[in-house]
Length: 478
Ligand code: SF4
Image: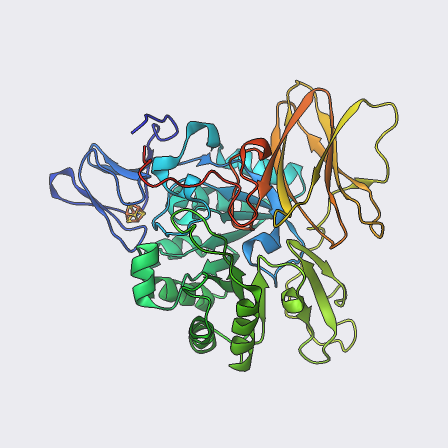
């Protein structure tokens, strides 16, 4: 295995049990790994050092990234809100189709993809950029427990909402530590079939369901999703089982998302989920009594929108990762009949400040990226290479009906900032970035919402049916 440095600074871990002979047991996930001195657990980011349980990824993260809350399969909390997504490295599962295997499986993580943050720095990024929600996400926040709990508490004190997007293979004890600091739980339930769980995720099902019930009973905002994997779980059986779980163990009003799969990791010999199968699953779940069932990772369908349950008024339109409130008043009521909308609103959580035109007399480099095939989102990384503040700009272009204005991005000296730009209308052609000469930028194309790209556009694959990440090659473990 190639030596990496990102995992060489152990940090004391919570949920430790000390056993005889300097052996420790980890109580963070249901695996309860028993770890001998010098060894690590299944996730490879928690280890035994000199008879104590430590975490190897404290403050180690992929680049902090501004996104929209829809990225996280959260549709009923602050639609369209900008969020700060924080993903780390490692995972307590190993799903055959993982969309983030380059960072979730610690053995493949390279130093170049790992950034170092303190809790204070994370909160500072959110505050300076006017972001009201921090999302603990991507690979999986469970294995980042200490950093999440400490930073979320700091963020909460600063008035920031915390969102936890997870496969939720986590112990009840760990959930009790999250409940005081996390406001929103978006749980990805991989399947309701115990055999599928064992075979495809290497975890097991019941703790996931129990954990979801635990946070629901604690009064948290909960939404659930399931990835509909082509020919494996994209059938009516999955839809029926999800509807039964949500309806009987949670509440029929919990938003439920059926998410489109793309081939990745060890599962590339297949195709993207046919959208008609997703639509069929949605109909089955609605017919079984669920109130809000949505599709994910799809464009050009009305099955991502929200309507008033009383009068049928269209309340939220969604296109890809973008949302617009169109039928809800400022108090959160239906604009037609006045019925309370099933949405929690968060004031001032949406757009950045804008200008109609780029400033005259300022030397700016303008780069353009055109949407192509199924690549309809882009991570844009901007770096201020100077010791003075800098102002950059970004906009979507090409739609004659859009206003064409530029959003303003203020960068502090030496700051590296990353955000997602997603196609927002059917006629939009792409995204443009304008930066002053003391800044640099790089572009990373995004295939689906839960996928964190680590490879720049020029180095990625343009195969429209496969992730732009490098393809997983069996037998290439480092
Ligand atoms: S988090 Fe889970 S997989 Fe990792 S060491 Fe703890 S029990 Fe094992």
